[in-house]
Structure formats: C-alpha cells, structure tokens
Image (cartoon, rainbow, N blue to C red; front, side, top):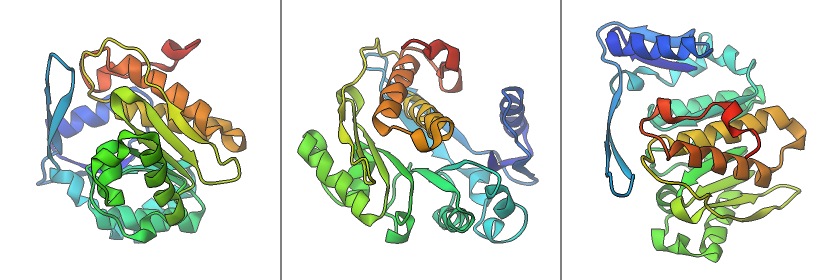
Length: 257
C-alpha cells in the first residue's frame, strides 16, 4: 500500500492493523506535523445506508512528484494491479496512472469521491468501478438515466469509447451492470444478492477487493461476469455486518457461494 499518514495514534493504528493482516506498508509514509486522514461514518439504522464525512488531512500530502521521482515509480514495476481512488489529490492520481502506463501495470480506478476527469484518465484504463451516482457525474448525465439497463449500457459504452476496457456500475439493491470493451464484449446486469442489510459501509470496498483478486489470480483467463458475481456475493456478506474493515469477509467465508 502506498500513501501517507500523520505521526499520531490514528496513523500508527492504521499501519499496525494493515501490517498485522499481511499488507506491506513500507510505502506508507509517516509525516511529522500532519494529522492522519479520518472519516466519520453515519449509518441510517432502518435502511443500513451510510453517509461519510471525510477529512483528508495527510492523504493530500501524497504528491504527483512522488510518482515522478524516487522509489514509488519503481514499485509499480513489481505489482500485478494498481488500485486507486480519489481520496488523494487528482494530480497525484493522474501521475500514478501515467507511471503505471509507462511500466505496463494494469490499473483499477474507483473514482470516489467522484469528480470530473480528463479523457487521459480513461485512456488504457483496465478497470473502472463506479456506483450509479459516480457514473452519472463522470458521464455527464442525470442519475435517472441509470434507472434502466439501456441507460446503464449507454453510460458504460461512453466509458469504453474513452478507452476503458472493463466498466462496472454498482446499482445498490438493483445489482451490478458490467461491460467488457474487449474481445469478449460481455455485458449485462447481475441481480443483487439477497441480504439482510445492517450497514452498507465498505460494501463497495469489498466488491473492489474481491473483483481485483479475480483479476490478479485469473490473469488471461479473467471472466468479467464471473468476477462480478463473486464480488457481488462478497459485498452482500459485508452489508449484513456492522463496521468498515471488520465487516469485510475473509476469503474462506466465500467458498461455495
């Protein structure tokens, strides 16, 4: 994992927790004089839906120059897939995309919190994972367009025409729409899994994690539809539990699903 935290108790807690679960945190810098980014999550108990109030703090100390000089660019040559979101400066994201493209590293972008992107961000992007609100904002359409499968298809195709190879649009209780812009040309809507929704926090993160695992493990045999179905089931497990990191299922919990 690459990022920055403050020299405070939150930063130490985050690094220690990741390390205890086998994550290499040597790329997570500790910056003196900065506070670790935090998020306040408010959950509506009747529906399980959440709202997140983000304070980026040290997240914004990861700069574009870190991917243009020093050791971070070299790290990209050693990974199978680079996963990014937009809780770091957009300029940094674009610099990392460029570095990954130069090193031949595939990228999965989950552009949240959503903001409009330059066309260059989509060019050659292997995987784009968005929810319906993000898809509408990035695609420049009203979110109601995504109420139908044909609307989802038109928005997904817009991304494909910009250069994205695989587009995933999560639709909450309606399921997930997917489209492959490559040789398979697979597309369609995978219905939502049945679940007793307690807390939707981390459902999207779980989806991305399971999907990314299939991308890396399956390699050239990767099947977008199969990956979406497995990721959907993993996310359904998450929403049945309270919390963020603690609600994410272990891989062995998904065997046989």
